[in-house]
Image 1 (cartoon, each protein chain N blue to C red):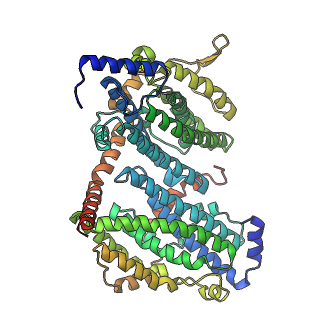
Image 2 (cartoon, each protein chain N blue to C red):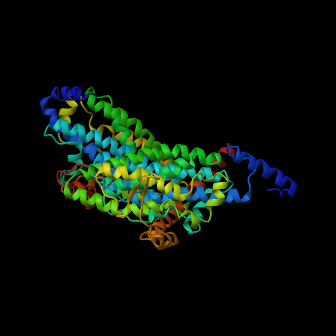
Image 3 (cartoon, helix red, strand yellow):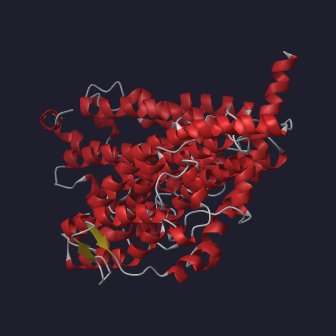
Length: 319
Length: 268
């Protein structure tokens, strides 16, 4: 990359700021501040990694899905996640970084992924509750991100949101079915809600006052709403759904505030949040090991594919 | 097809065809259910992301085919068993799948070589069965053939890459082929009552596709620089009637059927 003079740089920066102000999308070929590029790489690749690691907890139940319909939808869902991961890696590559480098960052622990996937899936009900709460939370976040200032990310979000809505619907259907089922099924689904509710709220990230990146990202229009705003929106959407499904959210402090029209909730255990983020969650090590194993035991496959492609290329050149 | 049209087609079946047709549909459905299960085990663990997607897709196709075949098997059988009853509440001894599909997923070379051998067989079978004048079956065959052609293409491409890639991939592919080969003869073993089905023109015999299968498989394996082992053991292995299944099937079913078995009568 050629060095810019100070003058050029400030002109370009001005144009960039104007584009942001006007609500125009920044496209891969547009000039952008290095910091903007870095933040986007961090954010989009973190999102891609989350899709990939997210395949593991749900993949855990594919072979035990209870009937054809559930088996097919779960398998298709996990496959969608792989597709989202691929799509998001491609979006990240538009910022001038290679997918192999991004994968390396995940496998060495340099890059993060959503902490929610460091919790275990212990029963079939978790497949329903993940669809409902985890995908539900992701949709709230991603609907906001669909308006993000970086073009490729925004377009990826629009597409991904459509599929996530489908996943949420399927998840909620499982939850409502179990809640109307046998006593064992009702226990199963309530236990699952108890385990996933708080981690779902943590998915929106630290409280605004403790979120180091938020201010800059909001100013650049990369993020459109703060973590706390999105979390509140999610709670407001979810409380009535829980009531309709016939499950109880495990928060005795949950109450409706007529004035703000918000469902107020009890304190989040931020100690747990930071512990899981820093690698001490119930499944962090297992998840990383599964990814590392898949990568290392697939090395010879990737090498073979490359070698074969080269051989074919040589043959074609010689012909 | 409409449910009423299927019922009509079933009631029009010659009497002596119902049992052999049920057996054939169960066999075809069970093969795909068990192989689909094995393929789905890769989801999240494949060598590259594109293969997570591809293998999940192929697994989905197999499970979907199995669903249609078992549903029809239940209807032809006429005892009120649904496709879910047949998949999730049947014991291992009543499964009719071949042994090749039961084997654990192994490494990527094993999965690919098995898929190549099986999908090529599948394509040969569906090419014939789609001509069946018995429409409920022909319909499944036509749809399945389209999918099988894609699976053949995918597994052929990978067989070439692995066989003719690097030394390690070649050795692994060769080892996979050598260990799978003895199980291939079983694919063509006739089910009971095939003669009645052939006489009524409903289904072809499975042994009729062996030549076509062999030709396609040999050509591609040669291009992939892989060697087919001697056939003798294959015939022997496939002809021991008491070794109907591998030990792996029971474990697989214990996992697959755990929820419906643990919660009898529950809806999911």
